[in-house]
Image (cartoon, rainbow, N blue to C red; front, side, top):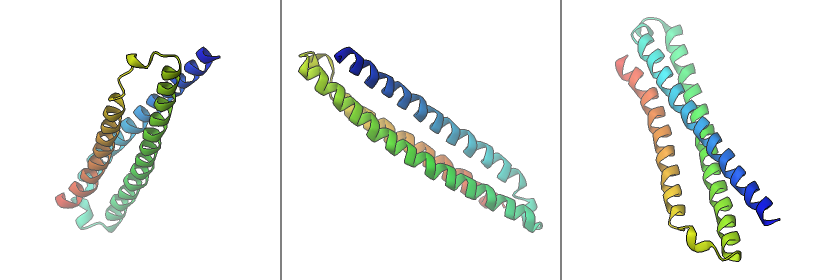
Length: 134
């Protein structure tokens, strides 16, 4: 039964990693595409109000998607921590906990914070730069 639980927890960790990767890549790609589109149309928005509305629609998209992704990353961060704590407890029960360095938990926490920073910062850049160019 222990092997089954171990396999289940590690598969959950793998799924968590895949989901987080998709979130991060989606956010960065969306932010960069929106930055390019809004920057390209920013000069037209001086004279054309519909272009300005399109820019605000894209900004709304950036905000909504990035908020969803940040919430997803925060949930992923807590999920990973809980799963790893469960694994550590299992390792302690099996007397193999010396093979897992618990300082890795802090490294994962820092990594998630850095991912969230990248998502937020690219979103801010994608939002602000076109309006500066305008």
